[in-house]
Length: 97
Image (cartoon, rainbow, N blue to C red; front, side, top):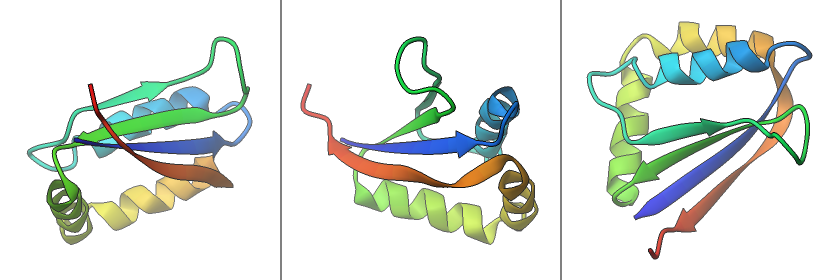
């Protein structure tokens, strides 16, 4: 299993809106891989972590390709860019247990 961990930097006051948009984004298609959204209690402030679980690289590729082809992704991305700062990170982990 592969875990994709994305870290976003929301604009000031936009944490809750970003969390809602992540959930909305996973509803664009009729299916979605398992995901979770984390906000810090102790640690770095002003970040939102988005973790997505894929069985393999093929599942990730299919999900992202289907999103891009859906016709709903571009308007979503335009809204997204209004609340997220440039930067953040993207990591891939192998889940072993």
